[in-house]
Image (cartoon, rainbow, N blue to C red; front, side, top):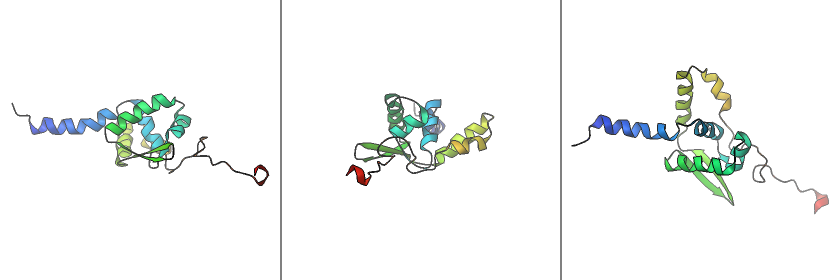
Amino acid sequence: MKRQPLTEISEKISAPLTAIASPQRIAILLAIGLGEACVCHLETSLGWRQAYISQHLMSLRKADILLDRREGRYVFYRLKDASLLDLITASARLSGLNPEAITPLINTQINPSCECPQCSPVIISAASL
């Protein structure tokens, strides 16, 4: 029996929603926000272990939600489509949260500050040369 167009369309629509359905993945997407973030920044922002974050990042990449770029040994992640943040904000509103409470949580920095060597450049003083 041939599938109905409504069923096919609803399956396509549900794919990204299913991929971001967990609170952990929503937190990761907010931490990445409009900019980009390396795994070490996500560790610092969220307080989670690298392996745990990497599992979620892998699922989000597989779902074609995140793009990544490598710079040396660091990998930086960004949203493939920033309108996903609008969906998260709308979901917050539907959940009874004030959307303005979500806006400050969205990262807007390209390279947010964290403690990793990539994000926090080491300043070399003349005395150390």
